Amino acid sequence: MTRTTIHTTKKLEKQVKKLIQTDKVTDSGVLGKWNATVFHIERKKCWLLTNGLTKYNLILTDIRAADLNDIETIFKNAFYGQLIYDGIIVNYEQVDNLIGKLDFRPTDNDRSTTGFQNQRLHELDWWKNDFVNLKNMPIRDLTNRMNRGPIHIGKGRKMSDFTDSIEEMRRLIIK
Picture 1 (cartoon, rainbow, N blue to C red):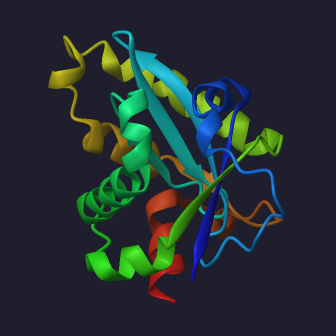
Picture 2: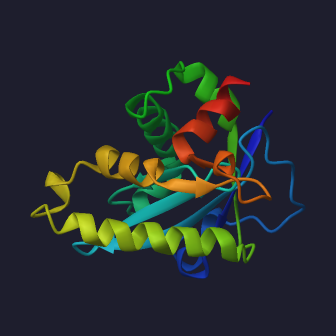
Picture 3: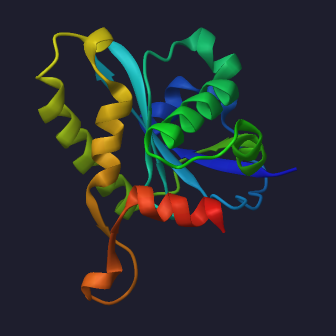
């Protein structure tokens, strides 16, 4: 069975202690590892998850302690919905097979991804002022904006090394 590893920040780790596994790290499957951090909108806990390979972002809103029992389904549904919104057409079974089971792990101190997430949260702060409250925020649209930002994949500094997260996720899923 495929497993997807999600490394949490220290802040999120404290909130999801019962999900954190500290046993031997397994292979992260096709999608690779993800990093998750917590942020707040109107005193509601939201998660920003970023794929390590593609820098593809996903936002889960209003996550409460009771939701932790069902976090795998919440993640899969949000990921599937965001893929569809971003124009990456797949069926739910394919997404379910790609993700498999979720393994929550303590932080891996991936400073590159943490810096990337902090920049995306700064952009989100800028955009969220256009909306009155969380209910009015088009989360999928805002996540799409994050995923459309140019990113650098590769070692060189050629223009061909620059792409966006949506295109990279499309390549990863389609192959």
